[in-house]
Amino acid sequence: MSRSDYPPGYDDSRGPLYPPQGGNYPPPPAYGFPAYGGPQPGQPSAPYPPGHNAPLYPGQPGGYHPAPYPGQPYPSGPPGAGYPSVMSLLSVCVLQVYLILASQLLVTTAIVAVFTFVQPVRYFVQRNQAIYWASYAVYIITHLVLVCCKGPRRKFPWNLILLFIFTLALSYMTGSISSYYDTKAVFLALLITAVVCIAVTVFCFQTKVDFTKCQGLFCVLGIVIFVTGIITTIVLSFKYILWLHMLYAALGAIAFTMFLAYHTQLLIGNRKHSISPEEYVFAALSIYVDIIQIFLFLLQIIGASTK
Image 1 (cartoon, rainbow, N blue to C red):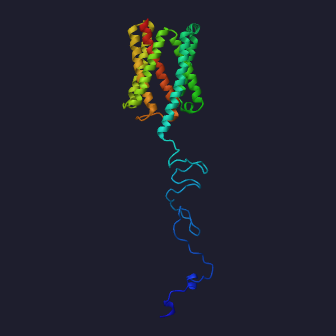
Image 2: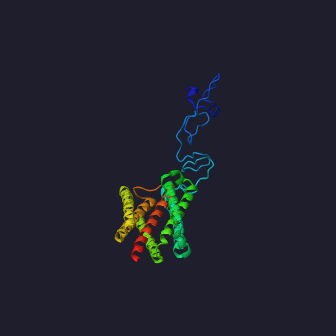
Image 3: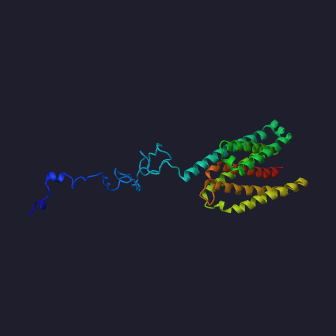
């Protein structure tokens, strides 16, 4: 048996398998895949898929969404924590709308109470009709701007400023109308309006009936109420007819109660149509107008029946 048949000795195994080649030859490339998708020394910088739960930025724990910029703090909870869901955004929007709505109704109730219970203010409002028509013009302008213009409606703080001016104008109009009715009728209309609004809100949160599917029906209903109001005003200006006035007021109260249910379901979501969280001013405006219209129609019914 020749010498080459025996295994190499210790000194031979420590040496290179092949002797160094002469000349300037490049070293052979390294083989294998990196642990996290990055290139190894001597390996071509070809793109490799990132490993499982590999951090996209230095210092980022695996399993989380990438941060907008390096160095941003990451949530300490499980993967996916710290990022708001759609339902949480809707909950914040609903709370924000009802806080704004409560402020609007508080201002309106205070103005109505002053115009009704304070006799000097009541007489001043009744003698100065020009202020009422000026507030009506402000109401129309601010209403059109908030409803038709997306920019002012969404831009803070102009949206809240316009909404505050709108609330003052409509509150003055409501107080001026209330000053012509008996104190008892105004108080009773306020009480019934509060009960109706609470009942409609609770019903909208609990029911499975989707009013947002009936957008066409509500559009037709609004046009009918508008045209009927114009005709009723023209007829009553020539001759007052009690039953016609009561009928129109009852139809108006029912219609705006349905509008209140429709706008409430648009706000709370989980329906076919819903309002974007950015439209919190529009949602507060719509519900506020519905409540004021319900109060005014109920005031006409109660005031006409008490005379």
